[in-house]
Length: 192
Image (cartoon, rainbow, N blue to C red; front, side, top):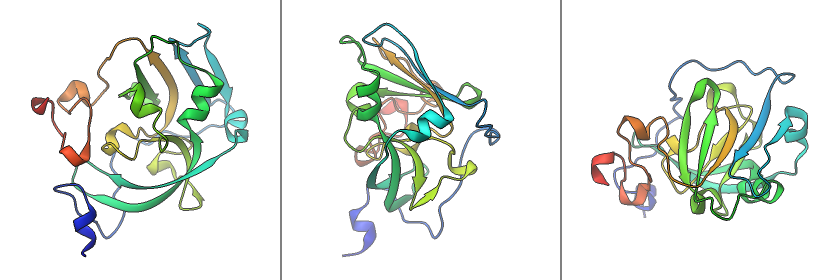
């Protein structure tokens, strides 16, 4: 069976891993970098970690395909990082939280249903295929949601906001599908 037969509709395997993003690549300054979890937390409090604290949290591995809305899929990527379920265990969402907004450098954002955020393969990746992420692929931390198109796998993550109602992120406000399931080819908002 050809590798393409195991891909979502309309996808292909490229020769190399393309680098795609909106805007410039931010410069990582570990002494100034932090990660926040805020919004509808169970405690009502915001939590903030320094880079050293985030880097010290135990990491897990997820092996999953990576699907880009521009029609390429990278099969079997070995990601390493903090599972979203681990993060939610450290800072639980409030019972009424239904969605998450993932915030990145320069105000970029992507929304996720809580069920997608808490999927067992969703993680805040720090490594790919055994190496630290590079800046152009989202270092120091990239959200990885393997079962959705990659615009939901936000590069340069700075905050997780728990929400009690859905709110569209950067690309969703510009006409991309609100859910982004590659197996259903949920690429554009007119398909909703």
